[in-house]
Image (cartoon, rainbow, N blue to C red):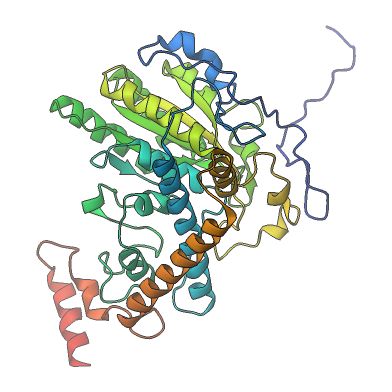
Length: 412
């Protein structure tokens, strides 16, 4: 028996590189040059796409020019529309945060810094494709021109709230926009999207599905179940991982991002994984467009990791100063998605600061007008939905004990 002393085992606990009070440091993030990756055929074999899960698709270079094969070559009107949707989403977020602070709703979640993910992906899809979103993709609905008044009423839980108070304020439902009700148990969206896509293929339909989760949700079983079924049945679905570096107060290393990219999860399942600069509107659009074409041509599903940063707090219940350095978002090496698209349009000669300021004021006024309309129906603090409505739309036939409770309430 060997009597030599044995080295003791050590358990590795992932830790962020810097903590509150320290200087933000993203020096470990490798940002490749824009345009260096080729765009493969949409029917390329999964094994030949291996490297895309570890690289990063980028289109906008440091001079704000669109370069490389992944450039979707969008016309100026489409680019301006994307800029408008992203800016509209951000101003909507800012207004609803103020409403929460004023007690008009109980809860809100912003998507600041992640607007390109939802907006570009929505624009790359067809209007009848089915979306299974997480709670930070309000830009999907903005890009589908869904009325903000409807979203505000859901946030306020007033009598115009289509969910009748059954959902947390930001867990929107918009069936007519092909927007599946958001689930607070985030991982459920993945297998539901895969199942929907399987059904669409089984019926020989032409619509595809897309789902979104954050980096933290990739550690849940639903994520892996979905990838298995998507691969086995070659479901026409796009599975998006929004790697914004933080899952509430847990940094992405806790979910495995310290060891490899989230896009690389696809490799073991036999489907392509694309890693994309999530703050580059054109790169997100181009990658999503490729994945949509692949799904529609029966070449199978795609996993897309959009590499971005959650600039705001996780929610109105969160204080990020407790777990990350102050103003860390300003040091993020991939910049701000709105500013980058704006500068690209200026470089093309299709935009300028004066028009941008005018658009900002126009959209701010539109959000203010929508807010005034939504508040006229009531807010959480003034006119929420009637308590009696809690008995509606739950059971096909109301059980006797709930009928008694409803009758007792009506006597009060």
